[in-house]
Amino acid sequence: MKENMPYVVLKTATTLDGKIATSTGSSKWITSEASRKEVYKLRKLFDCIMTSSNTVIADNPTMKHKFKCVLDKDDRTDKNAKIYQQGEIYVANKDKL
Image: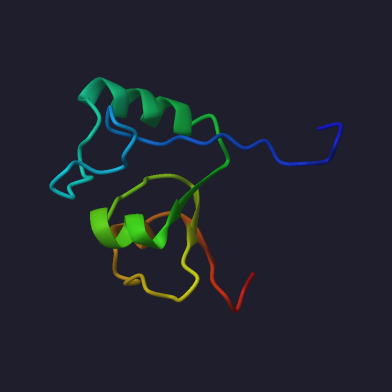
């Protein structure tokens, strides 16, 4: 607040070897049910959640949150994806940076 900067928290799910997907390329459920429940609680503490176009394309997440931001430089995401069905969406692309 003193520096007039936003408060940002990074949350990532990684495998034990530091990867964001399993050796088969699956990234859907590399965390436990308990971890996912904790993340849902934490998300409620923040005004906006952000994700990448790669996550939207690979996982089609719902991300039920009032405000969401999708980093989609080349407009690759399908606007019928679950994330676009609820809440206010901000898309950051190369034309709107």
